[in-house]
Image (cartoon, rainbow, N blue to C red; front, top):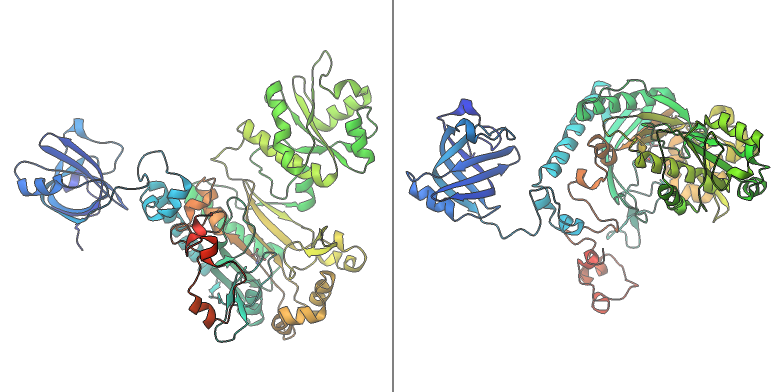
Length: 601
Ligand code: ASP
């Protein structure tokens, strides 16, 4: 090794030892003749100092600038009490330089590697290796590595077998677009990068592997929303001869352990379950943040004949009226009330009506229209208290249900009810099997097409498919989905029927998943599994809002890698080899040089 110790290692106990350190110069202070340098590496920061006794080392050290990489040898000296740095693990000592050399100079840095202020997102991504020198980014990546280690221990201890599935594959549907890779050897044919290893892990069960796990990279070409990455990492699990609860137990015991070991918070080992219908009814979402209350209450029946036209009009049109009650401990000024509609505008909600509950009479635009019976109905249903406020959303169900969820989250933020030190886990179960695709007037798989219906709902597949519930489940942590899965269909005939309902005809099913349907014919065990998005989970455990920092080399929301400049154009010769012709303007015409994906990002 070029060093004897790391920059995080030396203590007063090392006093008098001759050591060699390597690191980046994080700080340089010249105190007239005495030069202090802070050397940083992954492990910490150590102060080194020049003394007139060693003029050569002093002269060499004098040349260095910030972020140069250096190597210094000298003797550890305990600092006088007054000069100790209590915020630093090595703050009791310094190293008096006897020899010093520059290993590598650095150009002035384009991004800040120290200090509170981060550089812009664009610069941070372009110079990701410099951001990585920041302790919070390094810490996130190290935490990620610890998570992987805990996961590995946990899975091995439960007899799961780690299997690597291919990246060059046929399409696996998870509801997104595929990333395609052209084949050179088979002109005109393409591989699809896996949206998940779903089909393969099910085939592993047919192969008798019984318990599979993998930390799998998945690729989904979606119109990217903020905080989504085109490639992401999942802990992928599949188990044979299991029922829903068996899968939930494996996953929840792992997540509870990760919360304990990574976030340092002990939470109950058995996670509560809530049916999808209840989550949506009470919280307006299938991923409720249970760190705070503020449940949503449907008050349509109480207000359907109300003289306030906004309410009765919505009810008559078949819509819903949903309300959230705030007690006197959560006051809202007129200004804050006026800002509420903006919090639900994205969902198409037209406004938020409110009434203030006062002993001398209720106030607010709707108040004077409410009969005594309606007032007492609301008081009872919402638990209204004097000094409190009731907030109302009225309109079509598909608008007000999610809007009520957004309003609740908005209030949770506004009143700072989302305690960052709390970890509230919840399994949402009994999801619908299908989702109605309004644009194409057909059913889509709500999870993916291999999910099994609830046994008691199977007869409804023919009569009322939209009300069929699935053996599907999502694990929600503080309002974020951190895992999801299902018990699978293992009977060939049920699978074919579900394909039919999804509008996937026999020919198409054969063409897309023939190999898989065939596997189901050869003795498929009952099986089910789950996958957990590790980027999101790591961010939640670290209390980070953005998943960007837990990924070593993240992409932008438009799927560009600002560091390498991917995606980029390719050499025309490569296209010829791949038998591909482009139907887009040439780079010369668009002014897009290879790597310019990044400039439009
Ligand atoms: N393959 C699913 C997903 O990626 C998870 C599962 O059903 O196990 O979301």
